[in-house]
Amino acid sequence: MHALPLSETAAPERPPFYRQLYFQVVFAIVVGVLLGHFEPAYGAAMKPFGDAFIKLIKMIIAPVIFLTIVTGISGMSHLSAVGRVFGKAMAYFLTFSTLALVVGLVVANVMQPGTGMHINVADLDQSAVKGYVAKSHEMTLTGFVMDIIPKTLISPFVGDNILQVLLVSVLFGVSLAMVGDAGRPIVDFLDGLTRPVFKLVNIVMKAAPIGAFGAMAFTIGKFGLGSLVNLAELVLTFYITSAVFVLVILGAVARLCGFSVIKLIRYLKDELLLVLGTSSSESALPSLMHKMEKAGCAKSVVGLVVPTGYSFNLDGTNIYMTLAALFIAQATDTDLTLGHQIALLLVAMLSSKGAAGVTGAGFITLAATLAVVPEVPVAGMALILGVDRFMSECRSLTNFIGNAVATVVVSRWEKALDHERLHAALNGEGARTAPEALAG
Image (cartoon, one colour):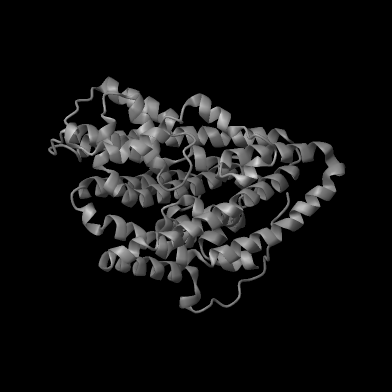
């Protein structure tokens, strides 16, 4: 197993609070909210800062995934372990993604957030959702399968399809392992390349406060805090449901596996704040992979579970899909039988797979689901368009935490988890923030 060429020495004296990423991102988010609220026009104009940071992150995601997976797999003594890890990860993803859909369905039936609104579908501005519906038509099973296979070996590195990068990385890693000593120079080169790539991650992460500021200022300036008022019950219900899912369901899984989900959240606080500010779990993907390995998860497991989870383990998106679908049905007085709801659940199980962890993907996936279940009017999506951005943060946060938990659980199943390093990291013993560690 090849360890990341990062310093494992004791952490230096902690810098002043104002130089820590945690404080800088919090400060940037607060400033962004204030600017967007009091000067909406200027706030909305800050969008390029958020977009630029997301593009910077996407620029380094492919090499980070490739290097982590290839060096991890090439160090496996038995290639059968690759299929075993992938199988265990998919079993976990399928179980908890389905559970998240069921939780959203149950909560929507119990809380009835849309009941009493009596919205006439004909009165809704359907033009606002046409773009999302058009994109959702591309999300067929055949299109999804074909989209995984890249045109060339290097084309995934100039696109933004994580699954294509994952496929090429796994195949290349397996090929290197199969050629044995003949591939050793390439493995050594990739091991050496890991250091400057993660140094690049460190440089990009320094811009995180600017990205969080721009994204949050745009969100508040464009949609305004007032847009939350009319649909506050739906937003609040979604946030509470996601919190319960993380703390109770994922918390129970974590406890059974010997760790605390609360401590894991605290360990990943810098990344979670970045996700909150940018509404994208992708913005913290490189840092998540590094910190999970630092916490004792084997590189080979991290390299397979995290990127795959970003497409197949979207707990927050799944909760949102069934909850929002039933909200639209209730708000438009659409009566759904148990059979209709089960059909909705089954369709959502398929359409939710492969939705990337980027801003707006949940809304597109919802459009794809409703397009297949005609009982729920797609035009009703216009009801939640104004607050979808506020729910996007919660979707991304829940997705991110779900993938962190999955990485630890699969590592434990695979007996590839260093429990001492995990508890040391979660208890803050010698732990450093992501940029500090990456700079090591």
